[in-house]
Every structure is written in C-alpha cells, then in structure tokens.
Length: 283
Image (cartoon, rainbow, N blue to C red):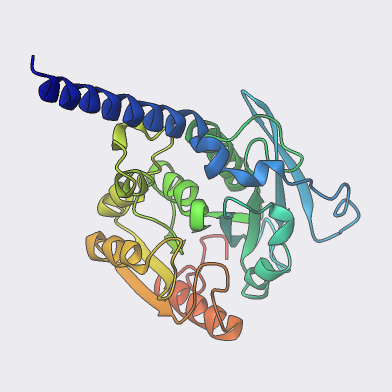
C-alpha cells in the first residue's frame, strides 16, 4: 500500500473509531439527558392534608410510584365523572401541575397526575418500560374507582409526556387523546444527530400510535418551538384519522400564551368527543 493510501486508510479507521465512540456515548448517556427531572428534589408532605387530593402509590416491579388523584367536585358512585390521566414533561414533577391542571375539575373532570419512576418521591429509574408499567398501573387503579366513568378517560401528555399518554391510548380504552408540544418519536431526534435510530433506548413512537388510534385527538403546539419543532405536530396530525391541530405563537416552555383561550379550546374539543356531555348509564 502506498503512503498516501495508507494515510487515507488510517484516516478512515480513525473516523470510524470516533463515530463509534460518539454512538456509544449517546447510548449510555441518553437517559441522563432525556430524564433530567429525576434529579429534582420533591417538596415533602405538601398535599397530605388536602381534602381534594388523594395520594396513591402504584406498585411496580421497581417499587411504589406516586400519583395524585383529584376527583371532580360532584363525582360519586351514583354519578361517575370522566377523568384525565396526565403525563408531564421530562424536567418536571407532578407537584408543578396540580394547580394549573385543576381547571379540569372545574369542567367536571377528575384529574390523575402520575409521577415517573425515579422522579420526586417515586422509586425506580425512568425508562419507557418502567414508565409504561407505572402509567398503565395508574390507569387500572383509576378506572376501578366507583366515582370514575371508565368509558370517559382522556390521556393527556405534554412534551415527553406525550409518549406515556400515547402508550395509555394504545393499550387501554380512552375516549380522547391530547398531545401537547410533543414529538413524533424519540428516534427522529437521533437521526437529526447522525445517530442510528436503533440505538434509541426509549423510542416513544407517538406516530405509530396516532396512525392506529380510532378516537379523536387534539394536538397542541407552539409555532416557535425550537426544542420540538412544530413539524412534529403537523406530521402527527396528518397521520391521524381524526385529529385537530391547534397552534399558538409560543415556544416550548411558554406555551400556551393564553390559558383562558387554551382551556376554552380544550373544553370545546372534549365536547366534540362527548366526554363532557354524554350521559352515563347510571345517570
């Protein structure tokens, strides 16, 4: 082999080695980057004296996972109410959403906030598998409550939470799915960084779910979102059988810009799904 050819071969081998190191770093560090909220310290014991909130512990293989259940004000066994199971973003805790999402209760909808394994006061460590076990276990506990109408369950996820919400919709009966500021799949981000999608440990393939979901879907996204570009929302909406896409002039962490408008549009969507106005057999 000529010296010039030898130099080219060495350069090629070196490039391959550097790329393999890059791929290995991504493979082993991706959960550190994907689930930063597990390093947040949760405020201790702030809700245990709240009469409107029940603290649940969902048993999983990794240990107990915390969930907060807030029943609708007039919900009862004789008049069960619809319920929403909510999944938050990757850098948050359920503590951050109790007040803002309390508006669901004003609509007559019970609210269940489910923590991720390893986040806050919950055991385990986060992954698609452990989160799936947690949210499906929480769903099963939710529909077993006598004051909850099991035929009117909404899955709602924001950002990373779109993945768990889609998992609920794919594996359990739901009357509606709300995906907010979320992605088509985590694999799409890997490809953007010249990484093979197969190396994604937690793919959360929301696109595959919406393609097969036969219920109504509400997709909400900010047109200025640089974290998860609005093209993800547009692709999700284009591939869903029955989707409504609403966009706001906002980015990722300041959306929606107008909460009053947001809740009016969420309520209008749920009216279309009959989640709010359909009578139950017990009524």
